[in-house]
Image (cartoon, rainbow, N blue to C red):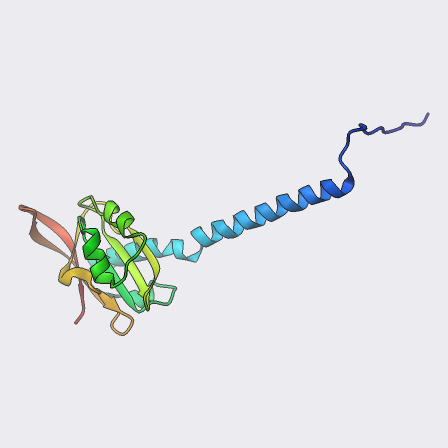
Length: 177
């Protein structure tokens, strides 16, 4: 007894099937590359910076840390912006018009959010916000820039200050000059 396999008469030609599989593979590869670009090596930076700040703050009286130890990208200026920094202040500090200035400014509309921007030349190479979860951050000397590649050392300490009429303990980041 012989079995016969019969295919439906309206089947796709083999060439179309191969083309569809190839297109699917291209889409998967492009998605993977895009995902790696967004979540690749730079995604570890905010965690490394947060951890470095916390370790520095755990020292009696605070201490210093070197931004070169936590960055895995080329930069020559680092800016940190306090909560409630206005967009025009950000652009003045950066010295360029930047399409994400409004986004950063909106993220800073919270007492516990701090934004950071790293630049190389006139190009932003890394940015983000939320360096701390439970305490306010104050940037001494305006963060314009807080550090440079030539002087990457930042001081960090917890200090009591008056902020918007209230006495608070805040993290103070300042350049080591």
